[in-house]
Length: 275
Image 1 (tube, rainbow, N blue to C red):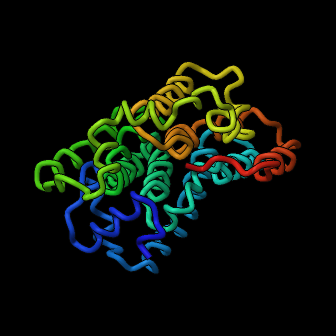
Image 2: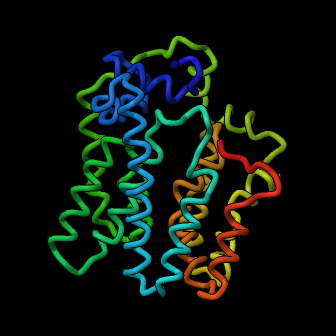
């Protein structure tokens, strides 16, 4: 089964089997520890993550004073992004979707004026940092708060106590790890201005860029900056900026246009990029 999955999924299954994996995958120990090599467990986490993500987005949109129809639109826009679905080879063995679900749940909690909710949000960030080490940073960006950065203590501790494998055993994977910028430029050669890869996967979420404030622009810029040190594309920038851009688009689109917006966003003339 592992042979039909992608490189990242292969590493998570190795970690689930108790074998050492290369950085930064050794920091993402929680789900491999919980699920092991049991695909049924991975499927359970994967499917539950869609529910958590929808609930978190609905809560965030509601706290942002969106109308009920716009709340539905915000959820629909986020869940309809091809990068959130991700590549087929990462389903269900992945950490991206669970990490984003935890992040989006944490944002409205951290920004709440209720101390108990803020504390719960920080607990979510601490848990999420064991799923994917970037959860504290992405949560801080989306919430526009320094509090989630407290969660960076988790990957720091894990980095100290866990030793990564020196090699994956596959030369190409090791080359990507050792030369992230060079391999990024190689994998993205000729596609930096390809709208099918860089723009069109956003669908109706692009509306959120209309009169966008500088904070949203910064989030989008940081999301795309990841591509300079990674070989994947759509899943990276959409798991980072997708929630914020979906919320911004939903806030602009009138309630009467929600059915049309969802129809245009969810159904494509061509198969969108997902990797």
